Amino acid sequence: MASKKKILKKIQIVITNHFDSPEDAFNFFDKNGNGTLSKKEIATLLKQAEISGFIRGVVSSKLIEGYDKDGDGQVNWKEFKFAVDEISKAN
Image 1: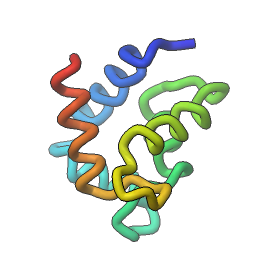
Image 2 (image 1 turned 45 degrees about the vertical axis):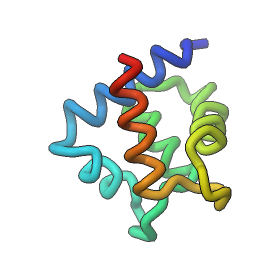
Image 3 (image 1 turned 30 degrees about the vertical axis):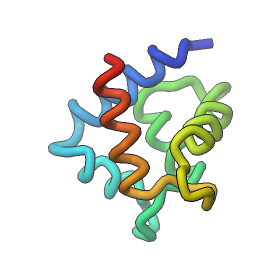
């Protein structure tokens, strides 16, 4: 299984190489436009980051668990921005 650092690096690469800004990435993956990323929408981001389908569900759950500060089971823009900033500092 890929390490947390490798997974976060792959996410950072997708966001920086394929989008003009983290906000563009968030809006792209927020398929239903409700202002939050669901587990399914995060899994789509992970697929784009070439995270194996085998672990994609586990990783998306862990990302929500780690960054969902308001406890609604999804990641809103503010939480996503915090995650992106943290990932950028770690890499």
